[in-house]
Image (cartoon, rainbow, N blue to C red; front, top):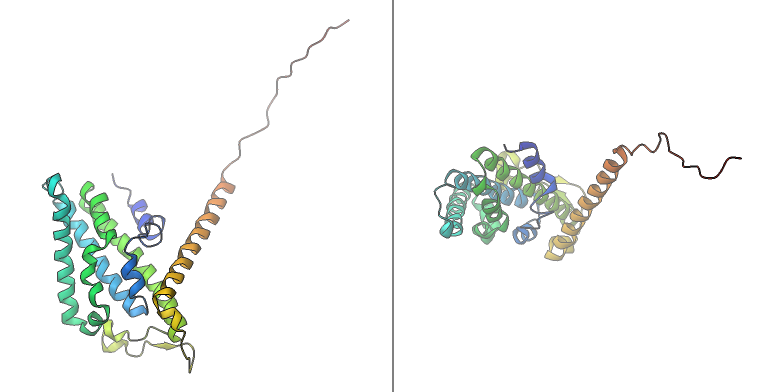
Length: 236
């Protein structure tokens, strides 16, 4: 029986596709110059990941081993095309900003990896949860990195959110630093690499601290009790 708690924790933390598996880093580093870009790519990737896991799990008993990977690619490409058409219809400006990285979701190693390593071997419920949690974990990392780069590079937060959420989000922009001249390094690709490295380092530190606490709470073996003493010598 699938361990749903483990699947959830793996996707969000222990086996996070961005921080642990280090998969799908090309779009992650390329488009996270702002929060709205990060959310757009994250939501698209999550929908594709969940849908492809669902479909692969449903047909796992009918797919021959010899053509398994090509069929997985076709399934993923179908979902990516659907998401691409939806973005063109409802969030066209954001789609233009994200550009080629929406079609390139087809080649995202995290999506293909989950289809091959999990969905084709597990029931539908567990596969859908795995896709959703892996996608959510990926999206959270995208949002944190996007927020870091937007704040350092532009001095704002939640700028241009109307590109994704419509006119109601026009006033969501938060200006943290007035008359900010900008920090170009944070917006350029080197800034993305540095920011990603910091996030991975923070996760490793947190994991090390949690491991230390776990070991400290672990009961120590009892060293007491009676001891048998061997006495040698003669008695006069």
